Image (cartoon, rainbow, N blue to C red; front, top):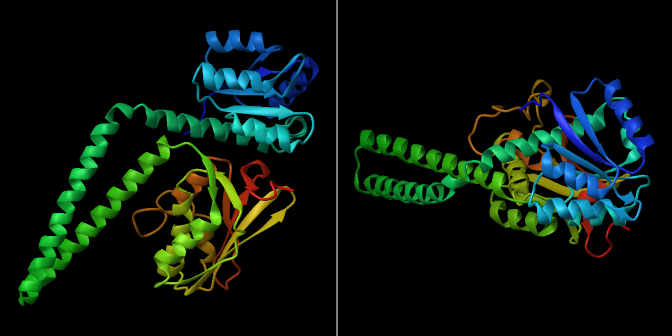
Length: 352
């Protein structure tokens, strides 16, 4: 999805900084219209009477703060519009407060006016694009109940098909019939995989991010897949990511790919901090990823199997501004998941 033009409601009592922001936007020729508000009261009036794609609000306002407007947008108007809190200084306490009250992102003001490459504007546009995609999926909410019932009925029928095929395979010695039964069983399993993928994709569009403990997730995957591959879990037991609950599917997919495509028998999960980011590293001892595939491996349609491809894994992470890449040098695949500071925490230490 590509944005034709983005409308931003910009709340800041510093008109000079607002003008610097406009200058930066114009410099990059971004398709953005910015509407200015100097007070929370003015921002509320504009928000109630106009349509916007994104809200950017300074935290510190004369006699108030941006969290007040954030609470109005989320709790009073019940709006899920992307909301970004900005501050003049890097303050983790403010960042956590903003995220806990429903902000989608947190930025220092300097990141906007010193954005020489346009990367900050691109990040903001990506947030809006993702939210528009989710809103489009939400339009089919009225079909949610029918979808759930249909999935249940289809799974029941697939189960019957599978059990019948198994019964025929056991009771016949005819090789031709048994070959046909295997084809039926393979199609039954493939259809079930596709159906499960559709359910997960539907849930992805209807779930809200939350704090997820990563060590127990890896331990669960280890139990599920230990017969295929050795899983080494060096993730701290108190590490949490603010992510979609489908984060578990991302890690499982990486393990499954290591076995299926990389022919690995060992995979290791570890983490380290790099500047203000957390990096989760997933390294296996398989054959690695061919150089000519590295540039397309996260594209839609890449891969030979249905279900959770790397493109969907990237979407799950991008939903909360987490990125994924691969930099293996031939001795196995090496995936890195890079997490912004406000998207991870340690229960015992809280990023200290």
